[in-house]
Length: 249
Ligand SMILES: [Zn+2]
Image 1 (cartoon, rainbow, N blue to C red):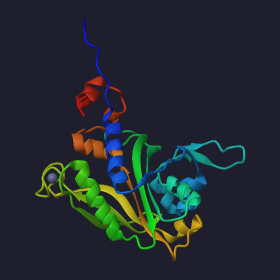
Image 2 (cartoon, rainbow, N blue to C red):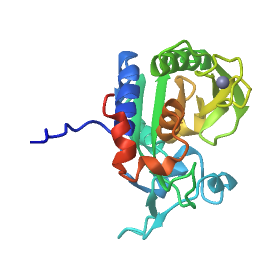
Image 3 (cartoon, rainbow, N blue to C red):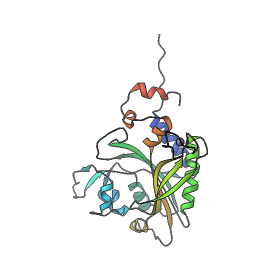
Image 4 (cartoon, rainbow, N blue to C red):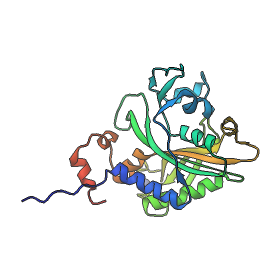
């Protein structure tokens, strides 16, 4: 008789749990929010008002308005969880929010209409960009099991000021340069920045008294990098030939 096969975690689930565990050890707690959001939480409260050109950054699935007429959508990022949490809690705040997000776009090897993000938010009296750098260096080193450096490049996201694009040193070549990092030694991995004063003021937190950082990382991209998966769609097709390669994790 054939022995029954034991089940195992999907690489996405495994990676989300790993990431959450690392942040939990640093004192972050988990926050959650709805996948169907209102325009207010997904955009306006995050300093992206109607007709703001930055709205074009997110291709959005719009839903029919609810009974009150408020426009609804499938959340395009996990950032609305920041707003919901800050509305309900006073600082200091130290949360992560893993979850599904949605984009209205054509799928290809690097784009899916649905993927996972992990959001981080730390608001305190003197939380600085240097704290973000320390937290991320620790996070990536734990995640990839070796010492990883990070570097920040100036970038723009409406809900942070300043905004940064975060690169991590290549875990494969250690910064020497290889095919994975396109010979640069660095891999572009997430967006982050200091929470924009408008965002804090929108939830009733005094931005003269409190400050902090926020970041958002794509879990799919981490899984693809870590395990050398070249097509994101493979993560959602339930193909056992793919999934069973992760049965020993
Ligand atoms: Zn490399």
